[in-house]
Length: 235
Ligand code: C5P
Image 1: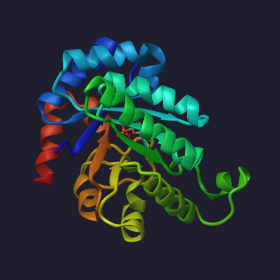
Image 2: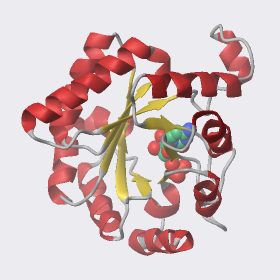
Image 3: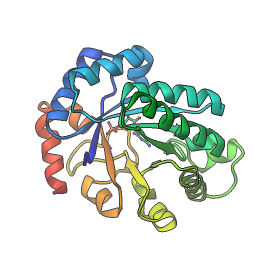
């Protein structure tokens, strides 16, 4: 199983492809997000996928729109053959179900494996003051569990959550959900703009199924060696 998805945040397809090759040879998946997607679109994802056919790709584009539109967007993701793609859980159960159904339907039509759909609960950049300012009352953690439960009830594979939320979500919703966790820093590496970080081992021990790690790998002089060193801490 691919435990680490390397966040490749660049608008440059050549650089993304080079990094994807290095980290996928080392045993990591590749997370391509909005910075890459807004510049290069589906063709960019297809280019990385073609250059690294064995790499599992997480298309981190966090769709949030009416059910019909999200379903159409996710049909596009299914055609790209990605392993994971995501939406915002706050788009609601109908949106998540429509998205999940579209992924299953389009993948079956094309004879491709169905991408796993994840939902973002509360962005870690949103604190309680910001939550209140958009009309949400109560602790952010309650909102995380509420949206994680809605995600599970809507038939999705799992959620993207911070390390601090792993135990809470596991306790509330059991062992089956995929928990994809960013904000991970190997011992001794730069924290950068991440405020609350966990080591890879701490997050996996707490119940994460996958980790998102970007700059500690992509910023290393030898990204493949950095990726392998992190994977060794998990074995
Ligand atoms: O490991 P690094 O901090 O470089 O990873 C940053 C990546 O993780 C970015 O792609 C960012 O979008 C993603 N991310 C995050 N915090 C979250 C969710 C995603 O940093 N809560």
